[in-house]
Amino acid sequence: MFFMTAGVATLLFILVVFVFQEKPPYPPSRAQAMIHLAAPEEYSYLQSIVRLFRNVNFVLLIVSYGLNTGCFYALSTMLNRMVVLNYPGEELNAGRIGLTIIVSGMLGALITGIWLDRTKMYKQTTLMVYIMSFVGMVIYTFTLDLGYIWVVFVTAGVLGFFMTGYLPLGFEFAAELTYPESEGTSSGLLNVSAQIFGIIFTISQGQIIDDFGTRAGNLFLCAFLFVGTIITAFIKPDLRRQRANLENEQTTPANSLFNSPVRREGLLSSEERRELFKRLQASNSQIMNYGIVP
Image (cartoon, rainbow, N blue to C red; front, side):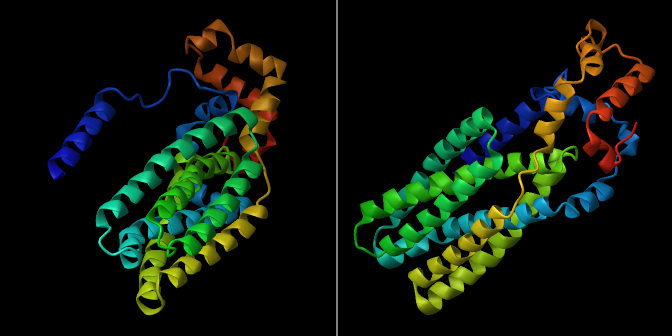
């Protein structure tokens, strides 16, 4: 098993080194073009983090994302233990339940991503998936000890569908709330939050299960998922990236230069790049607020 894991990891490493591009030859959107045209020397990682933590909506998302993902990490870690405590001798099915969570989670991430791309309803979709994660956790909590292992398969699959489906939503919502900051920075902060809450919840739930049983441990997670749902409801859908794309499409002079043959061939001089950036910048006050000026 370890050799198989090492083989897959090695293959992925080779693909990343020799196949993956650092970035596409042309920006995928006008919002990304504005970021790419900013002078690299003007970017500061520390200043970017400071600006992100001044963004109230993003801070709320960091907390709510950490709560949801942390609960998922704790549930996944304690799954085998909870199943065996309620269904002695079902170690094999415990592993299959974990597989069910993963497969249903892959499907959930795919469907929510497609839905989000089609509708652009970031706040509504994120909140609905969060609510369903909470509801799924409550159902899983009160059906775990019914004595029917197939029920656990169903409830765990539903829970995995929504909790894993929330992950890409969180990253995309963060990109919208924090534009034009680097998506890598915002995603990294979300992951840090998830790891911190995951460690806390795993240790805490394990202790609760030891002292009070599996239902109490799962109710502990339900409580924090409910808190996360409330926090998500207070996040304002400040879709800066979408607004930048819309405003730039309505900026005729900037669009003509952006779509010119010279621009498409990547032959703009530094002065032309500055001029293009100024035109694009004029249609997006968010860029000026963040201080990205070439």
